[in-house]
Length: 341
Ligand code: RIB
Ligand code: CA
Image 1 (tube, rainbow, N blue to C red):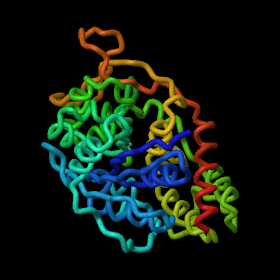
Image 2 (cartoon, helix red, strand yellow):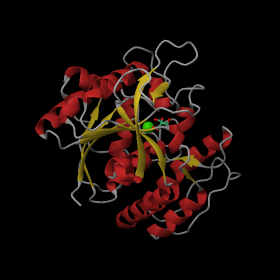
Image 3 (cartoon, helix red, strand yellow):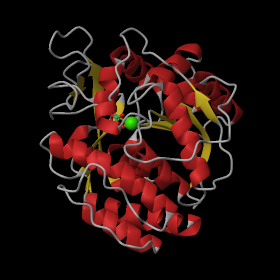
């Protein structure tokens, strides 16, 4: 299969980090550029995290561009309590030697889409601020991109940031509305991966143990909910060690928020869908974003039955196979880790 050329916009983030590793793991993805938005942590930290993961994996240079450092309207909120002070949990990545691009994220999306019309898939695993800026500057972007895949929203399912609101939308609801409105004209409707599916994809310590085995890392460790907060991986493999230390923080966040000692794989799943949409069951809907709701601002509302009299503007992921995805994740990232050593 030919590689899928990707523009990836992220707010790295522990699960964004795992999504990047999933994409780096094989020739199926051509990373055209990584663009960074504020979200889980400030945008500059996001950029540093991506440069650091690329270098840890000895990956050839990929352009990493800085984008929006604040949302379009509301004040920035970040979530270090979820992803750690630097956005990578307890991982401590060597400081990157490569630099952030001179180009702005929106400029990267517009210029690369114009350079390769109809070829590029856009993947967004953070707030939609950069994509909203790009489509505002270049209204033809929905036709210039092959399609976009978004991790965001929740459909007939509780939010994780407010009762009806998911994080990526909550950070910048205005940006999300711009994207859903403007991409309604796209031939390939945006594919939307919401919490209703991504919260069914839970990485466990057993998956991490299998990952270490797949990488040939020793010792093979099993993280436990009652481990000390200061416990860190002693894995021989550098990728496994850093992934283990990053995910340990995320497991503890889910445990402490009553979800169990697991880690929701929101962004890696969206990355897998970007490479192969056939792993997801899609259903067309008209999606809009509540901006004025006192209690529901940032809610993604899906009209499945045309009650608004508007054409569908999205393909919402309504089902997937969590076990199959997690097996593929272990296989791909385990092989990457083994190669890096
Ligand atoms: O709600 C989950 C999403 O918000 C994920 O993309 C996570 O990284 C955060 O950005
Ligand atoms: Ca993210």
